[in-house]
Image (tube, rainbow, N blue to C red; front, side, top):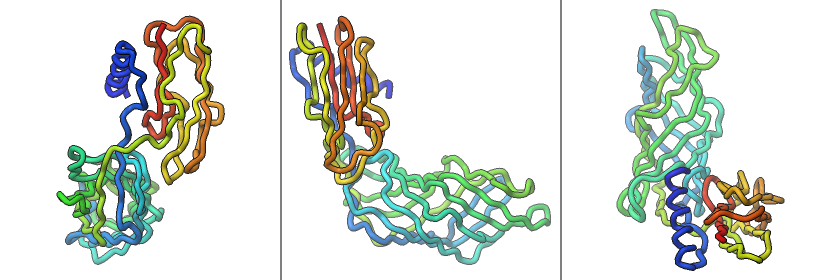
Amino acid sequence: MGHRLRIVLAAIVAAGVLGVVAGTASGYVATSISPGGSIRAVSLTSLNFETEAITVRCPVTLEGTMESAELPIEGSEIGAVTRAGIGSCTNGTLRSVLGLNWYLIDNSFLGTLPSVTGYLLTIEEAALNYSVTVLGIPVECLYVGNVEMLLAVNARQESELIRSLANSIPLERARSSELCPASGRLVGSLSLTPQQRLPAATQGYAMQPERPTVRFHRPARNEHTFTFTNTLRIAVTVSSAFMEKGTNFSVDPEDCNGTIQPGRTCDVLVRKNGTPTTFDVVILGMESGRTAGIAYVYP
């Protein structure tokens, strides 16, 4: 939050010096997915599980669904893996894929808007059960964790390959023999069908305040109620009523914590306490880490 927040605060201060009533901060980035629906991802040759001791190579086909909607990047669930097909492996066997459904979380994008080159995804809570031979002894090894993937897109913003990230956090051994390697990574690429279109653009905030900026003048009222409206077509989770506040403010989230359904509103009460210092700042409405509205005060 630090560097980005300082930039936002500097912009607010500049607006105050110039006597300009600022609006909301700049918007969040969202991607519009189409056509969505049922998807299928087939490994190119094999999807490998690499450990320090052994590499198990298996052809894998993943099936699932992808949302068909405009969704914010950074934390949105864009789909799920609901079924996995496993072919004939070498150097071991992938006996089972556990914990389905595996949810696909969109973390961030690569490139510069509007020319996105890919999306960094996480497959959450994957669980893979392998049979391997270690020191001549057959063992079953269960590995669990999140799988980091890159969904590459072309110049037309259409999906191409899904590739695992070599530097991702490895899956950890769980409830298995000590002969099993302690950890391992999935390495490989998969071809996604049908092809998806995923253009990205900056959008307005999901949680819009009816009064985006308030100046507390003497002897103006010492408190204001902000009513936030969820302007997206999906429910959003407000994890906190504020990101940062000046020392002479108090913030009461009232009913603006938790899940806010599309089109619904919630209130946040901001109260001035004592005499504010120059440019005391309150930043309101934290939805999945994005600022939704700003209030600031100056003497």
